[in-house]
Length: 125
Image 1 (cartoon, rainbow, N blue to C red):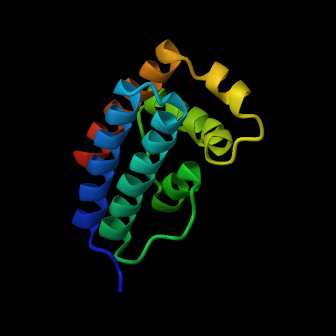
Image 2: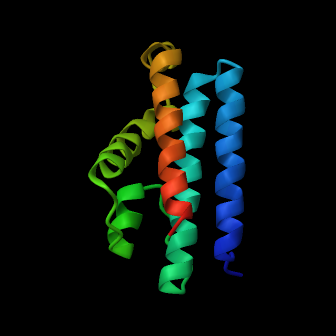
């Protein structure tokens, strides 16, 4: 059964809250992972709402944007492009220590803050 657009958004917000929780606990790799998951679910909810069909089973945020022909402000699009690329290593890390070093508190806070901005923008659509 297809998931309702509102349910996708509820889960997107829950996942963003989880990203916050992971950040406060110092689990920065998982903060980035949850930010990606949150935006993925928000995009899938928009997809279901705008196109009236179940979204594709993909983790590719850019693919979802393209399928919906959704134009974001340039700064948000650039961030999504970056998050789309960097989230794969957090999902399937080859070298845990390198990932942990790459995502320190400062860098992760930037990802979290920008993800919240994107989620807010998507939620207003």
